[in-house]
Length: 446
Ligand SMILES: [Zn+2]
Image 1 (spheres, rainbow, N blue to C red):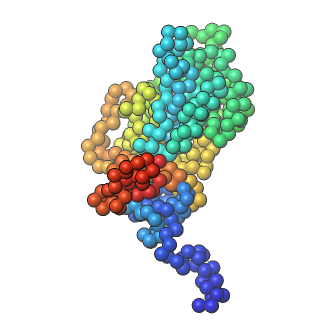
Image 2: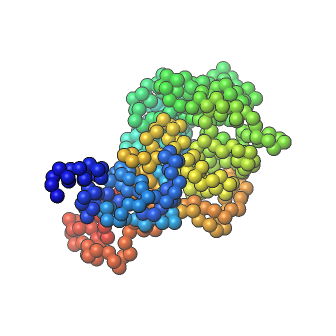
Image 3: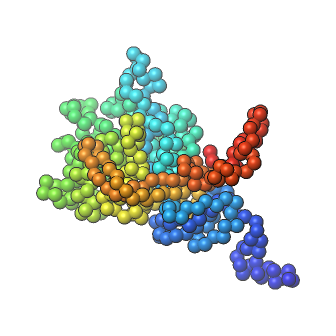
């Protein structure tokens, strides 16, 4: 074929690689899964290809021979890596030696290992204010910089952060120091957090009702980032005033289905202030935790059309044995929310809430952060924070988690070869440190 014609063919086909189909040009191909990518309006069977840590193609039929590694994900769902915007890592203000007699607070650190999130298909977590301006650098150096899951953070308006015994101290809430710290770490800090402020003691000159809320908003305004509110309403500080007057468009109320909020009016109707707040741009987040999710609020709200904008766990030391991103998502499935809607509220929605539109999507060119999920049918039970339960016949569970093209979670071996068929290297006994590891493949898994 004359060169000129080859050139025309190459241009016509769009890629010179089409002429050489024998050379794999993807590192990984997820074959035959049902892709739900709400950011791109995809909800059908598609193949997903990964190259050099990025999403390379999302197409109807990508030939097997174009990828170095192929994983059969038929009958499973393939979604963008999930985003959990309410998580706790690190120890915040809690001293490492928190049981020492002279420790200011004897409360244990709140945070859990960041990578536990991978078990649910989560590839991005946002620490919800465990640390503040004075403790953030330590959290970053000790946890964030070493995690395999992507860790972002809301900075606590309290400089010492959580669990250090200083959360009620007004002189800890320095909005300028808070904003300066946020501006110093724009790649990691996505917003401000306020929590746990003066929930039962009587008011005094040092403790006025809106102090923590006002300081957090002041910091968020200076730094131009959203504020996440953990809130306890009192007669002098009502929920309606928080969501209709104090919160700015784009601010996030987490724990929306907690017991202390008037989500459902006495006659069973949903409180109209939620729709009013939404109309002015207020965002509602689940933040399940061990004290913030009641079916008596969630079920009637869902039946009347109110589903929180984002689904999140509030995972910490006090609940990691019973709460997970998959269990919280499954509760919404059990309540009748459609799967694609649940994925939307666990991917693209939280990405936009934290102003990280590049996350929560399978768009070509973006980081290959991917969850492979299984929708199981059977007999399951779900619990809330008021020790009540709900029976259900569905459950969502993560089968594989990929972060930047690396397979970081695959406990059932979806991507692995049957051991008897492994390559010879697997059957070797390494006799010194430099020997090849006895592994069935070299695909990056850590
Ligand atoms: Zn929390």
